Image (cartoon, rainbow, N blue to C red; front, top):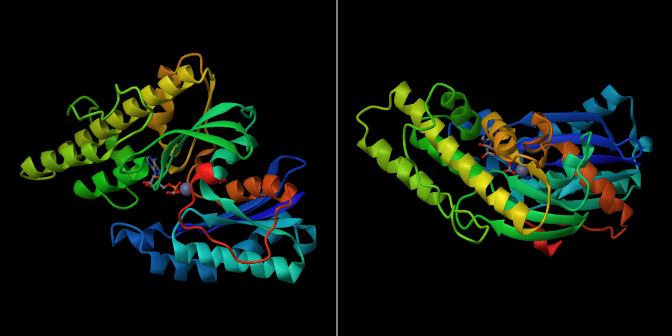
Length: 333
Ligand code: KG4
Ligand code: ZN
């Protein structure tokens, strides 16, 4: 089965074709709008919606050409129907539905977080159910026990900011560009992770929830005290912040693995692209089978939607209308 996946939940226009028989991606195309939003310090939903529209069809054509495919080869279309920004979601949903009608192929709306989770099944070796999943993105921080495709138990989540959101907000406070995650990672290489003793909220609590807003506030007060934001300060704050976040994530994952008697940890979402987090997880979670997607499949992409779509289309609860759910908990799947 060959599935076309379309991702437009935020500021990435991603399309890909997944071959479920071979478990490979035949083509994937991505266009990122990040530079368009950088001057505003975050994603502007209206700008994002408008920018997806002219990019979608050319990206699909380019992908088809690259993989020598045409519409006849496609068995179904999957698009992100939520969670995400309403306008951007509608652009992908409308195109998917139009293609589905024009090509007479089934069409299915996909939960964006499930797509971040399932994209790991492309890896070799792939995790096998049941496993623990940590999803860390711009909008979410979730610890999930996945027992099968579509069977997810949320064990913990953020009570305020998502991890990526905290990276983006701290970056803004210290004068770095949007998106803040990669900028902080870059600056952190020049700094010391132990220079500032930042809080690790809820790290020793029994529950598996997270909180990152206090960390951001602590950075805010350090910045306020500083006469000038020189490079050394920015580097040290970046390294200390990244270290505090990483330590919190490691501790909570460790606890969740033990509590649930699991030995495999799948990490996904844009923040999973962070090499410091990857290296620290490998160093500290001894004896745990760790799975990270390829770097380019951590941030939003069409491949993850195509993979999730292949499972959903086989379940045949397909739609005949355009559906989006800007708010959509994994537990409601
Ligand atoms: O999954 P994603 O592309 O979009 C959402 O679903 O939100 O994640 C985007 C988030 C942004 O907050 C961005 O700053 C963060 O992922 N991010 C990173 C890195 N690359 C992207 N955070 C830390 N380190 C990175 N290397
Ligand atoms: Zn995402």
